[in-house]
Length: 232
Image (cartoon, rainbow, N blue to C red; front, top):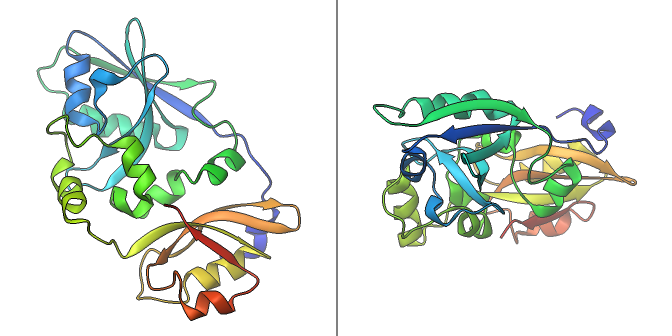
């Protein structure tokens, strides 16, 4: 990663909404999203849109409206999310419409980093929900609602208490290059390194991934200029 990332300041996040309407909108989304849609109200709930193999395509924020549901997703992933939902929209009384919206669950990059919530750069690694932390899974997945697309692997990992090798972390350091170096310093080749970052004062703060062997290791303890915290 080049140090040009160091010049990034806080930015406004852009969101799109997938509007689901129709008699079957609730039952359709219930089978496609990881959250129990029957419990979603106007205040909304986090949910996940998964591939059939349990890989996270994107997280989303589902809101119930008088006309149906609005599924808020990062604007960069709006078309991908809509295409994924349309694949399963067969003989169903439900319409899906994608449009840009004014705001979403987070309005600024700094809010997302501080909350430890992944975004498009993190989802690009094609990982299972458990790699993003236990709180991410707890807030986004219902294990009692019944079947949904991608549920089998996610449920199996949860039931077995599987310790996934790659973990999302929040890291602070003097430069993007240095943080990236530390995150990649231990473990096999894989989805590690700094993925999202911004300047905060004289430091860089961001999200990324590290192999579980780095966390609590001597290598990390010796990296006195980089602070890494696993997203729990």
